[in-house]
Every structure is written in structure tokens, then in C-alpha cells.
Image (cartoon, rainbow, N blue to C red; front, side, top):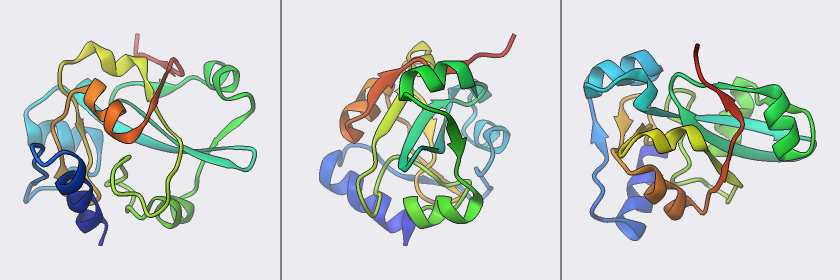
Length: 155
């Protein structure tokens, strides 16, 4: 069902973007990078977070980590990750396929500025085998995302 909602999202909002379904899993950053022939940083992973009662999605590059200090400052409170059961209930997508597209109900979406290092990123597309290739600015535009600086890069 989740892959179906993502396909419907792109059919309506961006029919020029194809959903790519691989035979191999793309559920982890490493698997997705290998499957799509890109560096892990180019995978756009979607984090499901809660700040107080507000749930939101943060899309960041694959090798970045949420920086608690930056996130607290940006979101105005302590940030916690949703647990596995909450993720699918809120996003409609299984863990490993979570993305900001085709959500059952609107959620605030944020794109970390780290994504701007790439002309094209590869976020999941609603299942553990599906993805899309998209420019970070276009992803933000299509999802109504705000740009934030909430992650730390490796090294």
C-alpha cells in the first residue's frame, strides 16, 4: 500500500519522476547506495521524530547524524526518534522505506542543509526496495519542506 501511495503522489505532483524498484533491498543506507551506484552520503534518509506532541520528518544525507543540540535549537525542544511501531503508523511506510512522499496525513517535513551538497539524492519511496532520484530542492518543493541545519557530518 505504501509504494502505491508514493506512486500516486508522483503521478499527481511530478509525473516526470519515476519510482525505481530494485530486486535487492534498499532498506539501509549501505544497501541503497550499492543498489543505486552512489556514495552513501547521496542516500536521502528520512528520520521520524517527535518534539513534544509534534511529529515531523527530517530528510538528511545518508552519512549524517542528527545533532541533538542543533535539533533542539531548531525545533524548540528535545527531539526523540519514533519507535518502530510508531513510524509505520504515522508515515504509512515501513522502516527502510520511509520517505516524505505519499503520507496518509500531512506532516511537517524538514530537509537538512547537508543535502545541498548533491545535485541529485536518492530517498526511499515507500518500500524496502523502492527509491527515486531527485534534486534536493525539488524534493523540498514537492513536500513543502523547510530547510534546517540539524545534522552533523562524519569526521
